[in-house]
Length: 521
Image 1 (spheres, one colour):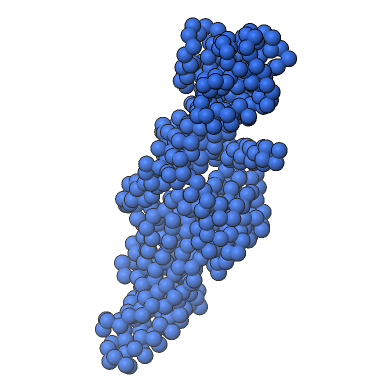
Image 2 (image 1 turned 180 degrees about the vertical axis):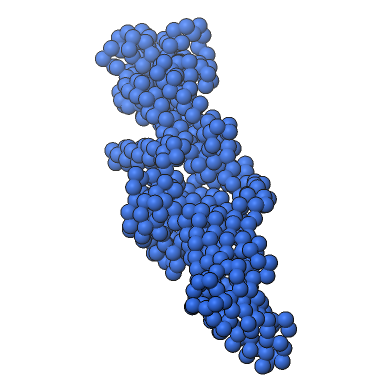
């Protein structure tokens, strides 16, 4: 009783897991969910490397939730916590990370939020969906499911054929096709569907595991990046200028201004931007001065301003000249806003200025204030490998998960068929004896008792089985008029057991001679 309860609990657990896998698989195919196996330590101690997280798309998101987004131009998924922003631009950060994410996705860019977390589930999923495990599951399903149904239906097939037998030879065992034909219409349909499900799952196993998860693909990305520079300087009321502000591309006279503000306007892919200036002199001296830290931005436009302290630059060049003996003037200033994006190479436009003792000027005038790049950049990027027809868009990663779920469903279906087949088999004493002692039984036609041989009726079939094993004999078996008779014949005695002794008057052995001796043991 306890074993039966444990089996039922196990079946319920497997059914729940199968339903869960089916729901998750359908949501993944519909684009409403994703399954993520965590990698890294950015979300410790909430997540650890190898955890499994199910991400489900939500209508809205709020601060404090854990959400996932895909890095632009790649298949990498980032799973971090929302710490700020709104539906148009969220700020995310890992719990164990010191810096915020450079990408600020909107609500429509998010894959979804965390709904189910299984510690180390990713590790076990990789093990369960390995080629060896899936192959063993498929083999076990086909062998155990088909074999069990064959064994249980074979006996019913034999019972229907017993009256047509014309000799005392043992009944020939039927194969799987005969057993399948003996199934009820419902069980035949269930068996066919289970086999189809197994074939589909096995095909997915082959397609998903015969190649990598990702494959290299050539892509041309047109950056189309553009940077426009300009500068201004407060020069006061002076006859050198028409107003109080000097603007690019006019020179800035040193006697009127010590600082200038350089403005830059960027158009292109979103990312982060860092600004620095390189100082150089004709003698070969160079140094780099950082002007602004890395700043993330979203959208395809960004505008910024940095301040150049000309007096400080001159002081640096003068100090270097005093040590090296090289000329300190003119000073070359190369201002570079470096833009880093996830979709292509870095964009590093440069504004070149020349600082002399009397003025700051722009070599090349207005043409140097705009930098663009429209060249196509060829690159090889990893993309998810898809399996099946092109319109499926089923990735190898999702195919592995689906194949595991389908194999589990097929296994449950086969188990259900076996249970149904067992329920349809007779549950009387004769059927129980035939199931348990099948190796000892030989079916024959009803036969009369031999003349002069005593017939001994035993009270249990177990006793008859022990006698057969002791003498190394088989148990002859037949049924007639709802009475099943089992006999063991040694050289001098016939041992007999009948399932319905009260109706034994119709049994063939009841036609006994006066020499018969019946002894109950």
